[in-house]
Structures are given as C-alpha cells and as structure tokens.
Image 1 (spheres, one colour):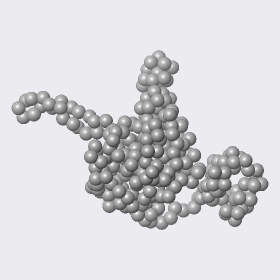
Image 2 (cartoon, rainbow, N blue to C red; image 1 turned 90 degrees about the vertical axis):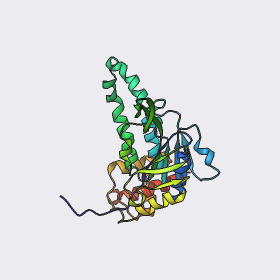
Image 3 (cartoon, one colour; image 1 turned 60 degrees about the vertical axis):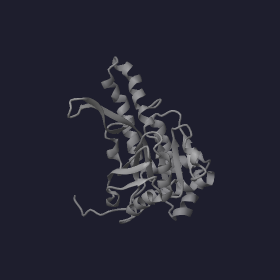
Image 4 (tube, rainbow, N blue to C red; image 1 turned 60 degrees about the horizontal axis):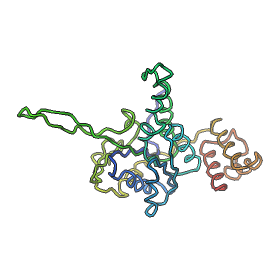
Length: 288
C-alpha cells in the first residue's frame, strides 16, 4: 500500500572519480573527518592512504587480491567493528585489478569454450553482491574510482582531423555512478566538481582542493529528517552477533549478560537491529 513519503536520516554514499594524482584519497579523508569520528580505509594502492597518517586518524586494511569477495569481507568487518565511515580506495581494482571481475571473466571463459559472454554468469553475481554490500552498509561509504580519458578524431571547419577529448570514464562497470547519491570528479589541478547529487545544496558545487565544507554540507543534509524506525533483528543478524561473540572467546552465558547489560532485554526475540549492532560494537571494543 502507498503511504506518505518522509525524509529519513541516512548514510552517505559518495563516489570520487579522477585520474591518478588528482587528490581522490586526500579528499576522501577530508570528507570522512567531517562525516564521522572512526574512519576505516580499504587500501588497494599499496599503502598510499597511510602516507596521510600524519594528517588524519584512521585504521587501514591493505588488500593485495582484489576479488569482490575480499572487498565484501572487509566491508562487513568494518561495519561489525562499528566504524562511522568507510573509504574504499579504490573500487576500480575490484573491476580491473588482480582477481577482479575482468580476471574472473577471463578465467571462467575456459569453462564455456572461450565464450566470454557466458563467462559473465560467474562474475556478474559477485559484482552485484559487492555493490549491494556497499549500499546496505550501516555506515557512511566513500568510494574512489580511477578514470580514463576518452578521445575521438573529429573534423574541424577546415576539414582537418584532430583529436578531441570526449570526457572521462570510470574504471568500473558502466553505470556504476548511479549506485551513489553523490558523485564528484577531480581533475589534475585538484578541482572538485559535483556531477550528480541528491543534495540540492551541492548542485553545481565546485571547489579547488576541497576542505571540510564539502563533507559538512553532506553531513547536514543526511541528518535532516526523522530518525530511522527501529526494526526487529533478523536471524542473520542474530547469528552474526553469536559468531562475533564466539570469535572473541565468549560463552553464550557471557553474551547473554552483555546483551542484558547493554539493552535491558533478555530475549533475542525482543532485540532490534540497532541492539545487535550495539552488542557487536561492544564485543569488538572489549576484544581490541
């Protein structure tokens, strides 16, 4: 049934695109500090994010194999640990890096007599799961994407042929930008230009070497509206809580005591999704 639409508070889904050296990592960290206190970074750039550790406080997970499964595991670990913001730097490697989607297609093609079209049956579901993990994550997510410049040969008014830049395209699946609420491009001069936004205050926004203002505008926009309604914890969420407790060496009795202490509820049937997240965050802090 239809009902009156209302704006609810939500989490950021931001995509920063640009060529190498345009400032994507630095801008992501500046934006993240405006959005939250605890920041996690999935680094696929051989430790490049850690070069900014003197300027920003964050935890890092360095990936060397860029299978979508590894991204998903890192996203889930960051969410379970209770981080406020996750930076994926970069999401391009999940597409075109070692063990990424394109390599999965290449390896799978042999099963289908070198038919690459059929090989996408193996790769597409993995990529879809990765995108769903980003969208569903209970934290702000900032993803960076490398871009490649596209050129075409055009004729001028004198009939001479010359190369003309048509624009830039992200190194990822076509249409990836539609998965994000805010998309911004950075150029070699570190100029940020918002190309897609659901936040009216960012429509046409541009800044050179953007500071916290960009993230502050987003944060204020996300905090407008009503708080999300509480929902009952699903069986998957409850199992995740138990798994985290067991990994931390807790018995079921100890877990029950923690649940009662934090939520005041003794029955798992009464727990909400927020309750489960609070318990998981507490367990991670205890075992850190």
